[in-house]
Amino acid sequence: MKPAHHRPIYQRRRQDLMCFMRDGIAIVPTAPHQPRNGDVLFPFRPDSDFYYLTHFPEPEAVAVLAPGRPEGEFLLFCRERNARHETWDGRRHGTEGARLEYGADQSFAIGELDARMPALLQNRDRVFVNMGRYADFDSDLMRWVSEVRGHQRTGVHAPGEFVHLGHLLHEMRVIKKKDEQKLMRNAARLTTAAHRRAMRASAPGRYEYQVQAELECEFRLGGSQWPAYPSIVAGGENACILHYTDNNCVLQSGDLLLIDAGAELDCYAADVTRTFPVNGTFSDPQRAVYEVVLAAQKAAIDAVKPEQPLCRYHEAAVAALTDGLIDLGLLRGERHELIETGACRRFYMHRTGHWLGMDVHDVGDYKIDNQWRLLEPGMVLTVEPGLYIKPAADIDPKWHNIGIRIEDDILVTRAGNENLTADAPREIADIEKWMAGA
Image 1: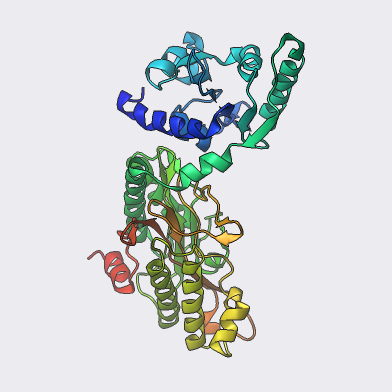
Image 2 (image 1 turned 120 degrees about the vertical axis):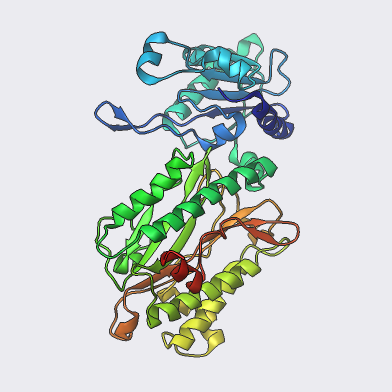
């Protein structure tokens, strides 16, 4: 059972959303429980929008927000208590728990959804819903609306407009309140501890998946139910594959190991990347490339502050990477032309970061009216420049297969920013010292 003191947080979110809805109704289903194989299911993870509004953790649930409804504005449809099912599959909160523990004004068995929804939709002008997310639910919604239309001769009217719920809700989610910031700090703290453990667990001859096991063991010991995304543990040339998740190769002395992994706590994600030498000591070429990426990350983080356009920190990273690549002899030409033409994309093919929150690539517009939006206190984003140098005839072999990314989670504050994941070593001296056991 969730403690009662959680309830005002979610009640406030629902009220904030309903202030924008006026004569509308919002219908928010949680995610379906997905089959893995045979009669085995994947571990259930709630839909982020649903969980943001309800904190209700179970599958087969639908939240309804109906502003001004005399019988209650927050309705929750969920599974009933069932002794036989609970013996096999675990405890359920049931309709009573939905009211007492999760603050629902009214709660009903999920099996009553079909019978009750048409009446709830009557005389509502618009429906706020995430169309296109769950196909089966979309079909049900169309059927309910059609049923209401079939009763128009009785004096009721059906909704005439569907509004994408994300337009309102995702703008709420992009600004993290204090309770969310606390959760994200905790996820960040756990994640940085796991990265430190993984650094010390790395050694020539170990498999990538063995280091992954150390990392994710720390996640679980710290209370995370699962990683925020599939962990990337990429040794040597595998680091030049941006989303490498096979994690099945032997680590070699002289190679770098890139780990991109984050814990999820109460559906809030951390997202951290560190790159370090398997044997604990950077070679001269590795050191040179690493310093370029680190300088780019520092320049980008410095550009994260209120009232700055969101594009500014990516531009700062690109400029620093371009300067470094010129110094290394990997780019040739006039600096301004190389920046303008995006010449560094040969070695740096992604942007410098993304929103972070309940989803690792979190919701929220990056542009408003086709202009990069300005950063505001409470926003959280990643800063993750990298360089990935694949073998080529025009590249000195000493640079071949060096893949480096450094990523931290940055909270925009009134004074500038806060690096939530700074506890994971990123300076070369700190990495080598930590890996040596000092």
